[in-house]
Each structure stands twice: as structure tokens, then as C-alpha cells.
Image (cartoon, rainbow, N blue to C red; front, side, top):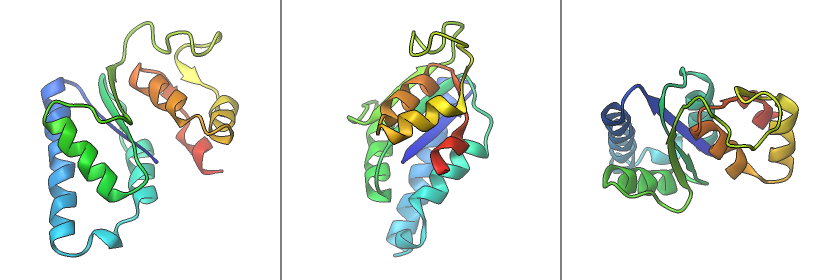
Length: 137
């Protein structure tokens, strides 16, 4: 799963990540973490919020992995499957020859089919718009 977070400024991005970590920690302490769906959380964060300038994306398979990655991020470290970046005029860094502002749905679908979630993550943190619905068939 790709869990994207964004904010206008780095300090707000960190605060947002800490808030999510705190929420997940609370659910874990209450024994309710299993009630949360990682795929529902991913979808909501992918499609339910405007993507802003400062970005971080976590590629995780479980809530416990996400909590660990959020903890690392809050401590100033990026875990192995975490990318951080910001939207710039040169978004996409050559991942696509065509439009550098949006990755076509077909390309996203192909990356998903090929298991190349890292390409989606890299494009997004560099500011490229992603059609997240392509991840969900």
C-alpha cells in the first residue's frame, strides 16, 4: 500500500505524520488497530486530500509497518520504503517522456501490474499528479 501525506510546509508535514502516528498508536493501545483497514486508509489519503507541496509517501503492507515508518519519519529518519520530496516545476525526473504534470491512468495501471509501486511513489513525491483510482481496478 502507498500511504501519501502532504502539507504546505515541512513542519506541517511532520505534524501531520505525528498526528497520524498518535491516532494509530491510540488504536493499537485500545486493541482496535485490527479494526482499521490499511487499504481503506491508503485510499482515503490518496483520494480524499489535496496533494500539497511538501510530500512523504510510505510503502507498507500493514498498520504496524506504517506505525514504524511514521515513528522513523518523526525522528528524522526515512525507513527503507519511505520517500520524501516536494513538488517542483521539474516533476517526474524523466520517468515519462510526455506530460510531466500527470501520469496517465494506463501508465499507473501498468506500473501496478508490473509491481512497480516505487515508480508511483517517486513520481508522486516529485510533484506528479497520480490517478490513484488506477491502483484499485
